[in-house]
Amino acid sequence: MPYFTRLILFLLCLMVLVESRKPKRKKWSGQLEMPKPSHLYKKNLDVTKIRKGKPQPLLRVDDHDFTMRPAFGGPAIPVGVDVQVESLDSISEVDMDFTMTLYLRHYWKDERLAFPSTSNKSMTFDGRLVKKIWVPDVFFVHSKRSFTHDTTTENIMLRVFPDGHVLYSIRITVTAMCNMDFSHFPLDSQTCSLELESYAYTDEDLMLYWKNGDESLKTDEISLSQFLIQKFHTTSRLAFYSSTGWYNRLYINFTLRRHIFFFLLQTYFPATLMVMLSWVSFWIDHRAVPARVSLGIMTVLTMSTIITGVNASMPRVSYIKAVDIYLWVSFVFVFLSVLEYAAVNYLTTVQERKEQKLREKVPCMCGMLHSRTMMLDGSYSESEANSLAGYPRSHILTDEERQDKIVVHLALSNESNSSRKKGLLKGQMGLRIFQNTHAIDKYSRLIFPASYIFFNLIYWSVFS
Image (cartoon, rainbow, N blue to C red; front, side):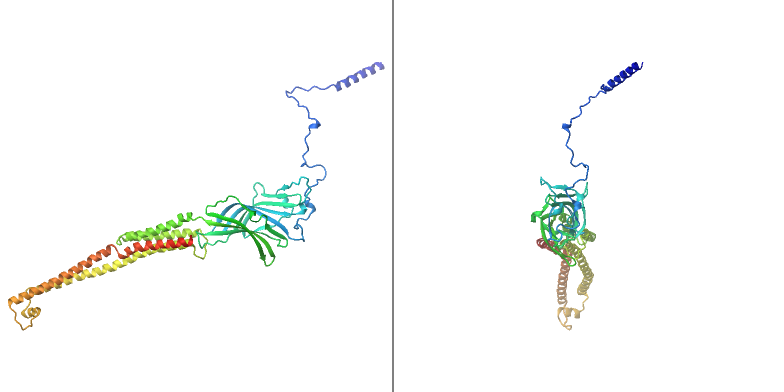
């Protein structure tokens, strides 16, 4: 019995061992299983992944003190600069400034950033490394506002070469001051400059220079609505501050020529038309007082509006501009046309008063002549007739001699009366002609246009 029991247990153990070694069947899922790749086809490991242990960086930034400039204590470190102007965004005459967007690039050598490389390839970084190393502290002199573009990230690029040479590029928009001279406005040209300088390091520590000379400044195709860009050029010089010393300063100079066509349409043509419109009053009858007065007032007010509109868009300078000369001379011509009518109206009024006085005197003279002829017809005595005939009072005339002498005197008196009447008629006719077209209006029709044309010839020959 014990032997039989042991045999049964042995068989059971053998069956369990055989069942455990058989492969297990999986249920059908409708998908084919792909074989696992062998170790011969494994991908190369990504070198940028963090490995176990402490990494060994190529740029050993933490091993150096980058608060000091390269080669501290030695000669000045040369820093080359080049600029690419992307756009001139705006030029303001009122604020006397301009806004420019540019790419500013610096070139220098820092041996602390050198790294071993078999392929001699550079490494490029973004703005995060800039905060850990030394970079030149260049700023814009006379700038009002400036900022670095940060969309989508900060527009900063740092490129380090194996031998320690560094390229630092940054995209900036700066608003800087520009001293403008408006004495020839709007027929003027303006020269503005953007100045670059190190803020802390004098020429003994840092030497700024244009890397490629005149070719260090590059510009894209820039077009402005109000100005024509004539030229860009670079210069450099030393700037002295009494408290800190001498500094290298770089200049980006550009000359702008203003387009005149806009001002011709908005200022010069309207002013000229107003002056010509004021001359229309010289052809209007001086008795049409409402027409000439309203025309004169309208032209004066329009010229005042034009002058106010031009000065509103300009800085309040203390000198006379070219456009001020043109507008104010045009205003004087318009104002003189109003004064011309005032003079015509005054002289006409004075002449009418004189004519009225003459009309009052004419009836009295005619009455005296009429009474004189009545006396000569038959109311004379013998002594009076003798005196009229030239005889003495004692001489006694016959009836025939008396009648002959009276006829002679009547003929003489009628002759004198007719000559006086003709003189009065001629004076009245001349007065009427004088009233219809005044002599001042006739002269003004020629003098005003000729004077204004002469002024325009001088103006455009001097300022253009």
